[in-house]
Image 1: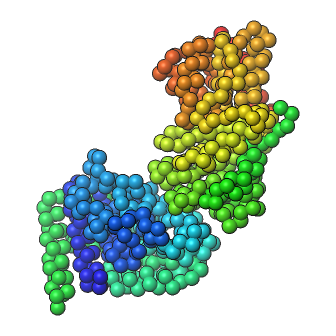
Image 2 (image 1 turned 30 degrees about the vertical axis):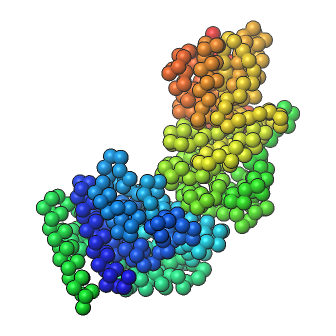
Image 3 (image 1 turned 180 degrees about the horizontal axis):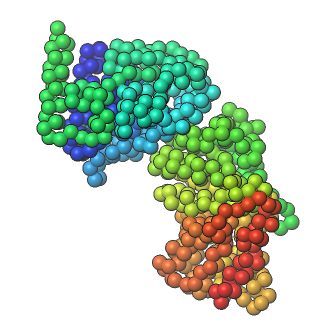
Length: 281
Length: 309
């Protein structure tokens, strides 16, 4: 896929996020939307994966350390063909595979059951160590929230991944600046993020997390970095793509109602039409 | 029973043996490898040993990642920090994912001794047995520790193995059969049953001998696997002897006593007494002094048995 096609795919992923959380009546659209471009880039460009063989040897893995943005992962996996798109509407329903937070046993393509913040990052680093032991070329990507950086285990993992020179590990921080109770820096200061990772010996790349070209470039750069892990600090907007959700912490953990959903999908559909036209040009 | 060997020592001895048999066995520690004896594995297989520093939560989450990538992981620290500090990581990243991690926790119970209350855990069995799918093992001596550790490594899925700091009598013989998930009958009897786990097993036998001298015929069972528990042997004991004393180097809340009581009340309610740490913290002292002061000796088992008869 070229950049324009990836951008279009990200919009389709955003539609999936809105539809699934609306059907569920709950969930986390804000952070799902802010990470949609990153997740799309990973599943449709960066990662070596095969929907027909989700456990393929040597594959790359995405661990959703901010497990509450499962709707973004589910929408991308469905778009990528890991399971039918209709299944997105079963999100959070009794007996469904699509749990509120990802479960690796139920969902093809989900590599780790997450939800309790901080743990996904550490387990991802464990997988990276295993790949080193096995000389497995697979790379491991961990998607972190910025609020999640307040968990102590994040910095334990940052320290140990540097110690063990895990250049097959990439942490992407979805830095949308907002968490449940409000702006990060009102709740608990996390800045300066880049300096912190740098101080722990990481290769740090700061990008616009909604600029597909920058996202792809960052992943490319990470691949060339030897002997240390890479942190990509992605500056993002919470609720990106839906006007009334953008930059509002209130959309961290609640779904849109019928009317809001209609509006959100209309906006995304309009964007999609524009992206299609741009593609034809 | 002349020799005394700590169960952690047995762990250190069996690890390199298992490491040779299982190429995918990885060992982790949190800066206590000399104490937990994982250093014995490091000496032989340095490339498969990972010291994670003083960061138990990080270690157990890493263990999950390694296990979910096909490794068998033995990850060790003191029982206090494994079961307490890392509890939620063990619950969510190891239990929920059924990761093949063996939490081999040393320095459990009052026999930690002089380090005192901060390091004496009486809660670990209780915490670990609440996690769905977690196998909980508490060996009584060096021989059973080795046999059970081998079976823990052979089975797929999360295990908690409780090991001790202090040297304890070598109670079992090499030829004794010790099967994970099966209680072991140590002495038959018809008047009362003593069900013990861990280092209390030899004391349970000593208590039974003391009771025999007074004409009380006590049965003794070693429940080294607290979860899944051997219901059959417990129900049979309740039916045939009519009274049960449990003995553990752990809180009487949530440990072996409660696990046995659950089986008993559902199937064949009989009178029970629990020997173990009362609802209180420990203190510094020598292991034997502490066991006497906090009521975890053969004499305490005898008194508990008599209270039921």
